[in-house]
Image 1 (cartoon, rainbow, N blue to C red):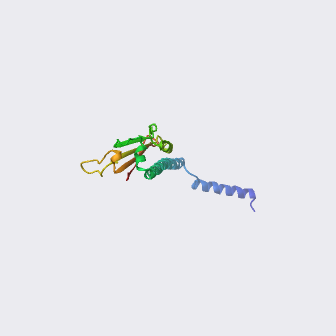
Image 2: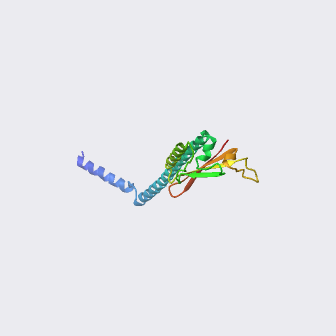
Image 3: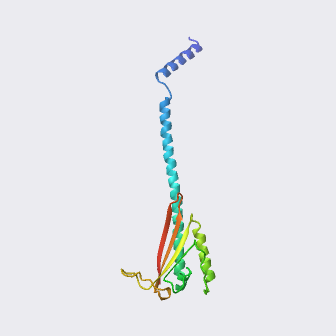
Length: 188
């Protein structure tokens, strides 16, 4: 009967011979190729995540601007006719008046709604400040008749049959990309 030490020696010899015929593990070149492939996949995925994050921010800003634009238009529809153009600080003798959140609040002289109009300007300014470099422009045109090929139809506010209200929001996305959203409504 062979001794146990001899059996261990023979088994050890067989495993060494098998290892020489069938080497286990990967070569250096295989490992480097695998690392290169994994690295390039990680770079592509990281780039996709960055693009996705920018898209989410852009979508969030656009959603805020649309919500603000709709709110402004709902406010305008609820106001009396004269306040729609007076909100800009315009006079009845004007045909077009514009106000922007980048400007100071208009001086509402002779109006009983001066405090409410000033509060509205402040509320719009605060809401648009949530957008990066956000500015809201509010424009009103007095219209006597619908525009045709020869005339724009504009007239004095006091003589106008309807008002064209245009709200324009502008802001700057990351990387300096300028964005805007415009809303237009007719008030009878």
